[in-house]
Length: 135
Image (cartoon, rainbow, N blue to C red; front, side):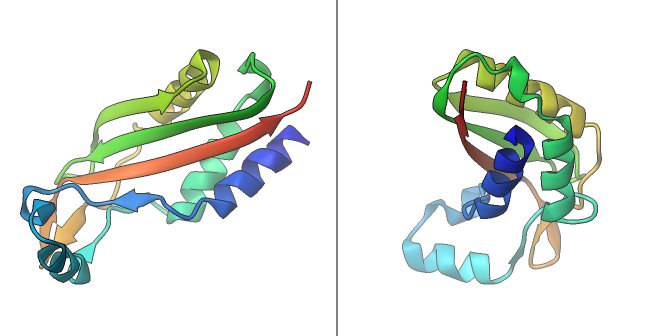
């Protein structure tokens, strides 16, 4: 049942990608123009393969909290497609620790780098997770 909840949450996550680049820190119009020519970084097999790998590795029994638990993983994907930075944000330490464990395992896989106008660029990948854990 808990894995089903994890899978549903992963599928329902709408905001996953956010580009971080010095070029798009300007005006909103400039950001819209850059995003029109941006190809985001991609996990091998696509976002669904990433979600499935995450769900298979996730161990709900490691989470000590009950009720709604939120956490967000932020990864920096380099121009070469390597995960260079992992940051976990959330209020529950046990959830953050489990997310970090999984992200470290998934970071061993090389991604297809993001591009702007055909040139590889750094990319910030975000994975927000919200779960309702019952005791």
